Amino acid sequence: MIKLKDIVNETHLSWPPTEDHEATMAKGELRDMKNAAIIYQKIQPNQQLPGWVSAYITLASDYMHSIAEYLVEEEATLGQEQHNDE
Image (cartoon, rainbow, N blue to C red; front, side, top):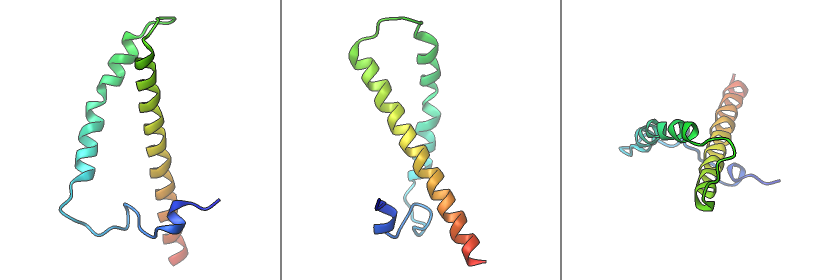
């Protein structure tokens, strides 16, 4: 399977530093996700939720899973590249 990283030879770890503050903004957003803990506590077992609520939770979970996989893979790739350079 061809991966995007095989086609595009740039990653968030290799881009030159810029005045862009994406990482700072992302960390701020993640701090705001304390709402997830509140939501988790508010949902009772067997509680009936509107379909849109379940869909939003599923979508958010899928996005977070994708981001985690991406960051873990990038870290492993960078580590492998550094190991190969030694």
